[in-house]
Amino acid sequence: MKKLKVSSWNDGKQNPNGNGYGIRVGVKGREYFEKNITKINLSIENSDFFEVKITNGFWRNCTEFRDKRIGEWMIMNNLAPWKKGENHKFNLTVLPNNKFHLEKLS
Image (tube, rainbow, N blue to C red; front, side, top):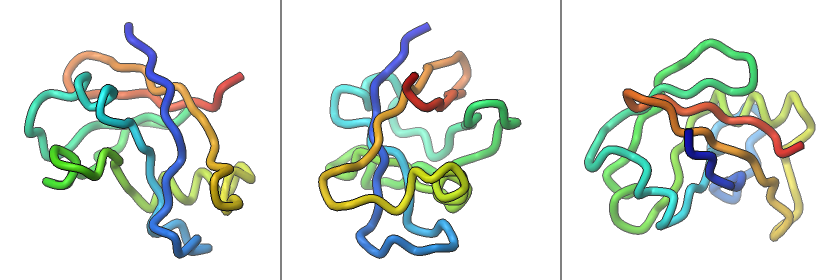
């Protein structure tokens, strides 16, 4: 299984309820996603899988996926908010059938 190094992403608002947070995979990381999919299934550390929408922009120039539950997890684990330029790094494991597993770097 392929592990990608990815980073935390925010829309700049640092919303305390978790909105506006996501994971930036970058242009090279995007290659591990099936072309033009509209959703993935994501597990964060020991969580069950949940569905995350993939926007059309993901395939153009916005190489991140966003979901309030990602933001809630980051906030609960003191990974958000962060100072500009100090976003956190994670491992994103690519699994079969549009499934991905996110975990903090150890």
